[in-house]
Length: 583
Image 1 (cartoon, one colour):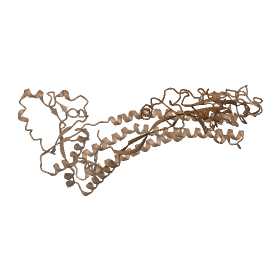
Image 2 (cartoon, rainbow, N blue to C red):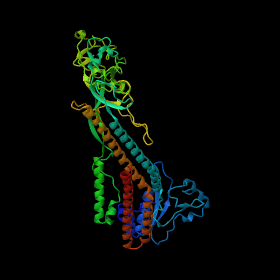
Image 3 (cartoon, rainbow, N blue to C red):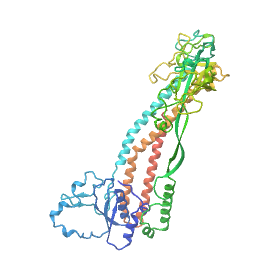
Image 4 (tube, rainbow, N blue to C red):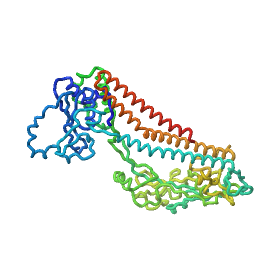
């Protein structure tokens, strides 16, 4: 059923002025054409308020744009329909099958099913407007049925999501509590003596610098012809290769209007003059405000587009021939042969090679590769840098001492930046102190998989617990403070893990609350539909009573609004109940 509107809302309809002028005049009938069923419904409700009768004369099939225009005939209440001038032609039976509205042009299930067709193809309308407000122009409860179905699907999902979130939160919290209470402090100059194998342990010790690996420029592929650039001992080293690429940037932006009309020009209905003669001053002010608001929003609505581009060459550690195809054509082409891969490449010491002081504990492979490589390596100019000759092809086929030179901490192939030039820098990781927490083995090295508590019926296969600092993940922070002891570092770690668990649980609870609120609101939407239907029936019974009809219409609108508000608060309360009490 279509939504019922009050008289004050209907007066804003573009059809109200024409119908009201007909009601105030002396004409016997009014022919009106509306674009769709929604406009037909508005005209029908206006006729109800003005005690007029409405008849749908034609409902042709929808055109290619999807619209379905209707031609309406409006008469004064109690008057019989005037005879059509075409009635004398009715005896011509051979022309009946060629009428404008054959039966096959109206598919079953059309929104105007209340308007029937006789067996001979003639059209029969529901004539005068009456009932609950949807007879002449269609309507239905499809929206409320869809809302109910969505609610019945969303509600179980919301309950399941809430239970899953609480189960995961409890299991993580239990795992952190067990790990914090069972964690054993390990000494830096001893390994498994007194420690429980397969238990969880932690330590904070100095790293033995003598176990670092010796890195040279020949460690990395493509640089074998270069010598003497650096000789560093570290836990790991990174090579970063950048190349000059052509980048497209916008130099000038402009605001393009979404509507192709002047800023002070807004299209409005041509019936404004007639309507102003009928409407009161307050209603004219409301229409004027509505026009000015729409005009302002139209003027401020635009799409930012770039009107002028520029191209420039800059260093980049990422390059894709497909993505840069257009810009390369504008600037210059880049050779397909590259002696080194553009981007970053890492090299680390082997597992178990790095140890703490006195060799008590060794770092496994996962711990070694977490060491951040953020210390820039200074480069030493080689002896051939004075004979540097820039290669005409960039990047060059291979890197040698003659086509490269050292500038600060960079090894470059071009004195002046151009497309295809290479710039190489190196970074190392050489921490002096480490903090480890994980599962203890029968050897002086920790498991890479981390520690897990024993499974039980609700919690199984929980996330492993382990940490290594310093780490490139950035979660160490206060753990590696020089004044933080091993016990303090352990407390900081578990405090952060518990806080993260609590934050994630609250976020998921809020999502579950909103999902439950929406589900309950959809499930209770039929109640709103029933109340709205009853209100429309009451309005139809009192429309013919002066003054009382308007009061009843206002009262029913208020009742429907109150019911919708109650349904919304009930849905919110149920969702809040799950959020507050289910955990």
